[in-house]
Amino acid sequence: MEMLSWENVDHTILQKILLLFICISLFWKIIRYMCGLLYPETEPVTVLVTGAAGQIGYALVPMIARGVMLGPNQPVILHMLDIEPAADSLKGVKMELIDAAFPLLRGVVATTDVAEACKGVNIAVMVGGFPRKEGMERKDVMSKNVSIYKAQASALEQHAASDCKVLVVANPANTNALILKEFAPSIPEKNITCLTRLDHNRALGQISERLSVHVSDVKNVIIWGNHSSTQYPDVNHATINTSSGQKPVKELVADDNWLNTEFISTVQQRGAAIIKARKLSSALSAASAACDHIHDWVLGTPKGSWVSMGVYSDGSYGIQPGLIYSFPVTCEKGDWNIVQELKIDELCREKMDKTAEELIEEKTLAKSCLNSLPMFT
Image 1: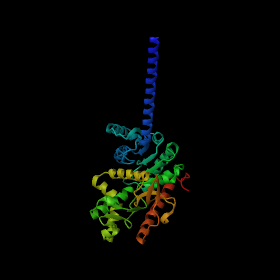
Image 2: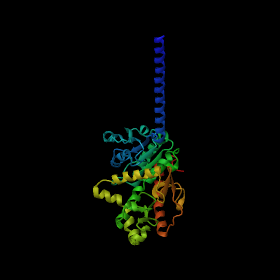
Image 3: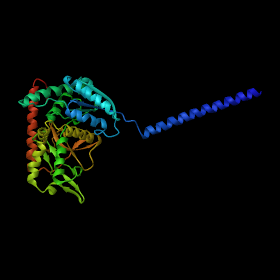
């Protein structure tokens, strides 16, 4: 009887211990579930950079990996594409990204295969292109880039995520973006843009230097039109944050001659001036501007502020629909909208139309390069 009693006791204790472990396990799972709700694991975003072994690409990919483009809590997977002769350099860039041990970087693909590079990408930054060389005619450059962007657009069309956002950096950026749009028809037209944020930032910098104010206190400059020497940097609506509130840039500069001549030409020719000074292109500032462009597009522009983006014209401000033209835009929840009803003076109208004419010429030239294909409607 005594031995049977002890067996019953031991059995009861074991049951209680087992029940306790089950309760602890369930409690721990509940805790983990609740923590997951409070701090959800963010899915990585796949970002493609073409021309990744080049100067701009080399400056850009660490910025993306560090969180400059998409924020400090967004993991990323980098897809890097370049041409076959740059394959070894591309491998070197991949090795450096691994060696940098970026906490947000969840994977790196380095390839010369455009289909592999475009697979599943959420954001595509098109840096690669054929640069104009000494003695080359515009049509020769356009013909090279039409071929490049036709192939890359087709790969994005087939392999990228359906909501892929595209930023074209390589020149002629506006027309390259237009070519890409035509050969990737399933990508929404609002998801294909080109970089004029570099020019926008240059304009901010020039005003900041002129007035000896912090660049973050300058806002709402505008770049109208083409990313070329015909672009129009416009400060008619720009303001400065001062201790006594917002003041118009034109009022504080108080020199219309400078604003209508030297300021405009400095912004228009800044890229050429940098090449002359350092014998290389403006890779650092272009990479930074690309990050700014995507950051504000995805995460939104500050309230009361706009930025400049090359976007698909809907006819706003009398600009021919169907051009990729730089407008002032605001961004919210991953979408952009052109700022409407800004007053346009006579000088502004003249310069906006002039840069639009250049884009129409580029569109016609691009069409002639592929006149056997139904590229443009």
